Length: 433
Image 1 (cartoon, rainbow, N blue to C red):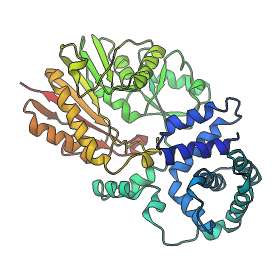
Image 2: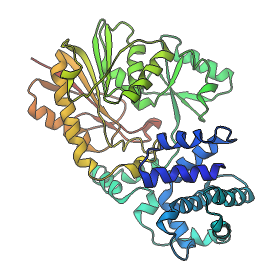
Image 3: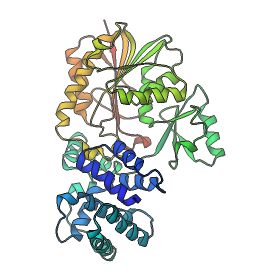
Image 4: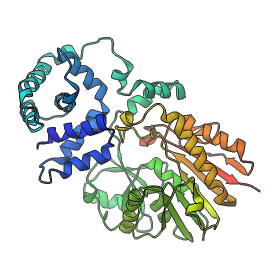
């Protein structure tokens, strides 16, 4: 099966079966172990999901009548073809030949003429198709209407900038393991391999690559000198400010980027307990710890029910990286736009407050809890903190005098694209007597 057919099958799983791209893509690639260009499949899938509404609108103009529901994979194959012609520098004859062959491989031999005709019509009419016309906000910004409305309400002066930033390919950011090597020394290693990079002005462990590369090409990746982690995500460990012999909890820890960063940054802590409700995802934490030669206590458990996994010893520091809508990382995970539903904005804040409430009794007096999400919506962020402070007299918000983010009534918000970072929210709570 060729790359275009695999891309169409992957996109069908995401858009019609609500499977995450991080699951669907490896599953499809695993069926074709000898595939020549898996990177092309990945590029097509991510690109189509970033620009889906625009591509769908173009296809509708080219089709005299819509395809039947059972031919959803064929419709997505046509969109895959248009995406290549519009965004990729693949020779046109290759796109046409391979996409027509993909129709056969999807069991749609009857549609080869249709695929060839639609793509050739696009090439003839692409100037007319891109001419000014009345288009919806969905098509213009490639987001579902409810997400556009939510971001407009949250950020009335920045919403357009946010939506545009969400369509841009994100930079590849690295976290230097400063127990092994300094950031300056690692940059020298990159320069020796002609890998261009820049350092983050926000986090002293972060490096951003000018162009993304496979991790296998990073110097000493297997040896644990470096990890892939966005700069905004790296801020979490810096805010913990762990003292010597601290007992630390990382709640909702998978896949373990923040867990490992805490251990790298604070080698003198007594113990770090990493908890996640998903045992399969927790295995990813174990894998990351192994590569970096770090140790943590891993526990499968629900952050809302600590009585089922907590040993009763109070923590000096807690990182509560709460499950959220992930609206701050859409550029990195474009499938979020199609997997999330508007009702999530009602259920998630309730869950976030429940987790925060359940974890608070586990914190020592004068201890600190960092609440973080990769959401840009205040109902999951500052509103949750405000409600928690209203119900918990021993909780005190600490001000964040930072060089990053936008100060909120409670906490601080990073918007997508700021200093090249993903969208993240942070609040620091201290427990008082």
